[in-house]
Length: 133
Image 1 (tube, rainbow, N blue to C red):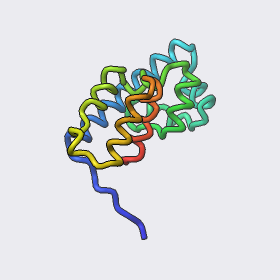
Image 2: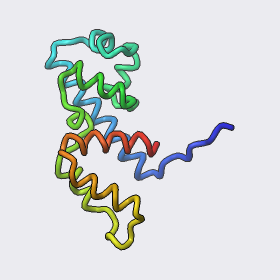
Image 3: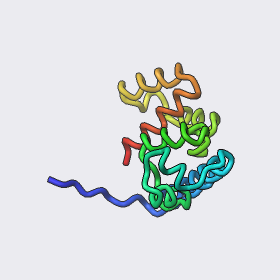
Image 4: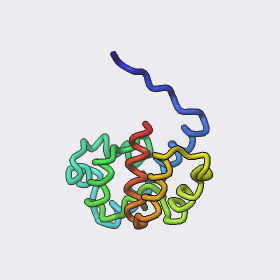
């Protein structure tokens, strides 16, 4: 059985489009700083040049493993590619529902989140975003 994904609401789609454009711009700037052509960067990341070009133009979002390879090859933190700051991640944790409104699983997760470093929070946010798609 094949499940159908429902399309995101228009506001979410606009946010996703903005993220794709920001990621592409950051990747392009890092590639230029590294002195690489699109074809060279694509080869090092393990992508077809056309796919890499679409990422830079904001036409597609990379998978989490590809995002990691981009980060390594272009020598740019993944949080920079994703336009994340520590304050945004912290705000997300702080925006969780009030304690009495949370399920036991959510309360345990919340406690665990508070003990993570900023870098660990960023990685977890990427994973959570991938799981919700």
